[in-house]
Length: 254
Image (cartoon, rainbow, N blue to C red; front, side, top):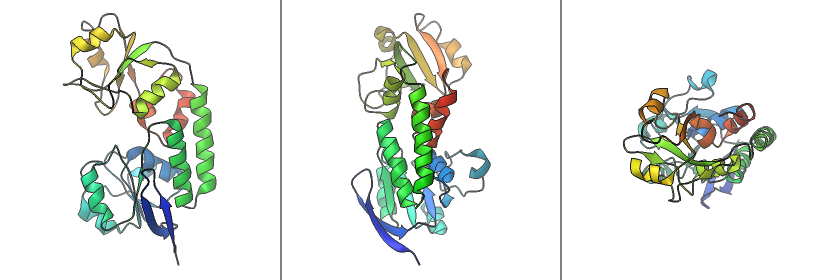
C-alpha cells in the first residue's frame, strides 16, 4: 500500500503523489536518463529520450517534448509525471495536471541540476543512488572547470541562426568552462551573419543538437567568419543537466 507524499517542485508548485511512485512518465531527455540510471520505474518517455540506449528502446513513446500524445500517456496510467519548465510546453503540462501529479524542474545552473537530482532521489525513494550520481557529476564538472578560454558564440540552430544567450543552462556551462559568452540577450535569440561578425568571436561552437550541425556546416561558414575558430561540440554535454554530466570527466576536448 502506497502512502501519499506532498512536495514542492522547482517551480514552487505543490505536488501530491503515491510514494514511492511505481509508474513514472518522463517528458525530458536528460531527466529520463537520470531516472533510469537511478533505477526509477519509468514506463514512458518522449521520442527525444534516447539514453541510456540499451534500456530506452523498450519504453513506449508518448510524443515529443512539446507535443504530447495524451491518449498514450493515459494508457500508461502514470502515478507521477516528470517535466521541465523550459523543455515542455505550458498548455500540455496544464492539461496533464488535470489528471495526473506533475513534478516540474526549472534549471539554469549546475546547483539547480544537483538539487533536481536530489529531489528526484527523494521522490523515488532512491536517495543513496541519487547521491552517488550527484557526486560523480560534481567530480566530472569540477575536473573541467576553467579549462577553456576565449570569447565564444554557441549555435543551436541554422536558418535562422539561433544562439544560446543569458539565463540558460548552456550559458552557465560556458562560464563554468572558462568561456565568455558574447551573446548578452536572454534565452535563444536569432542573429544575422553580420551581427555575429560584429561580435568578433574567438570561437564559434556548433552544437550537435537541437540542429544536427556537422563538419559540412563548418565548411559552409568558413568565409562568413574568417577570424573565428569553428568547432563542433556535443550538445548533450552542454545542455543535458542529468546524469550525463558525468561524461564531462572524459571530455576535456569537447
